[in-house]
Length: 474
Image (cartoon, rainbow, N blue to C red; front, side):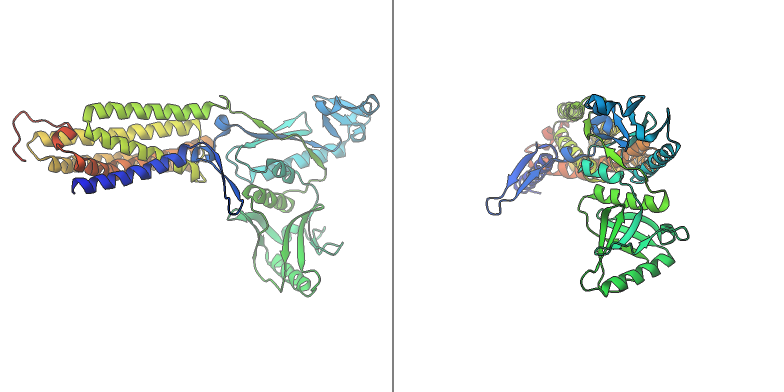
């Protein structure tokens, strides 16, 4: 390849890598259109990356059943109002839920059942982080990841009380509800989400027939063809029927927020397969909490990874010259690809383990490339031309590099399917960096070396290769 062509392709590759780096690390800013007036925020990949709460913190709230208030609310009561409450740990219980000096047994049973249902709902969501703590028997504190959007609405949905029913929106009598003979689990198997925004209802055989009859009946009413799926007084999902629907699975849209859709599905499913909540809950203040190492820890970790990568680049550039320059391109590619994967792969969460995995992958790629460089030098020392030395150097290193990456990829896959959050997160990160390391060291590195070597005036100086005898190959 000629020098001009190599230079053009190198510039194009450099521009592409620069764009990828910009997408990964640029600060957030607002884009506005003068033509349409639309405003949209740009967030870098690092900004949208799912952080483990130990790094990025999260959101929390506390649920209080009706008749129970926190100390902060009690402090705002007047003297006459305060007389209606009894202290219970850090909480205050209204006398209406007391039976003399003891808490009413029926109230206790309702609250304990409700807490079990709330736990069932949250655990069914498979969040990347979840902490549920019962406070003084009657309040429930919940912590969730910071990437849950519309947290206030989300928390509100998760504590909805009441039974699951189906209404024709203009009717006051439910078209379908659980009875002593036939519970709603006789008609519905499970409620989940599909593609993030669809609520999926899996029906039993009886449920399929029942829904078919209901949709046919509603479709015949031209004034109101809407079926409302409710929990308590809240209408969560609506289905418009234009005819008899005879499907074993219903997919109903209506939500654009993935987490809200998951919350709605979890609430309805709990009414079918767990227990409905019989006591109303008040959602406390939604608060943000920081990671264990402070809010600046993610930035410090990103900078630390960058500093280590820079040190490796400088060291290899000094030792190998042109080979080191190609290595710099490989490092930039590695970091950009890993960043994109950690940012956009749903199953990957950035944890302290992910930091170790990224650094391990960087060292793995560096070791693989250094072994290739050393084999190239050995081949050159036998009297071969530079092009032949590069080819033979890669071929002689190929088996060892593939073996170690294959073994690490297998370990990563096994870890990724371990039902433990931290181990699974580390396994996914390790799999990501292992595959990226293999791609950069075996596929991209030869390309970068070929392009940069093609622009060099003197290949020997570029590759920092010397022989004791004069080489007359040119």
